[in-house]
Length: 106
Figure (cartoon, rainbow, N blue to C red):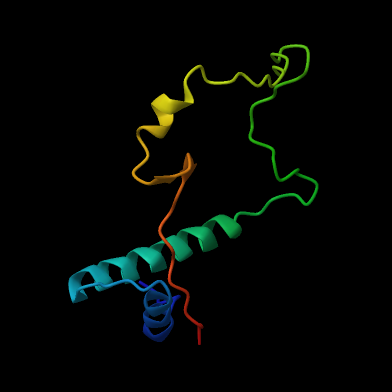
C-alpha cells in the first residue's frame, strides 16, 4: 500500500481528535484512512467531460414523471413532555448538554 498519509500526520490527527488508541487499533485506523484516500484518488482519476453537472446521478427524473415536492407543514407534537421525559438532563424544560472542554490547538 502506498503511504498517502504519513505516520507523523496520522499521529497529529489522533492527538487533535484526542483519541486513545492501542497500537493495534492505531495501525488498523492508519491503514483504513490510507485506503480511503486511495479510493478517493482512484475516483478522481476517472476521466469525465467538463460539462457534466456534478449532481448528475445517471437516473433521469424529468418534471413530467417526478412527484411534486410536498409542502413543509409544521405540526406540533401533541405532548412535548413525552419527548422531554427521555432527555437525561433538563433545566427549566431546556435540554442541557455537557460542557466541552476547550483547548488551544497547536
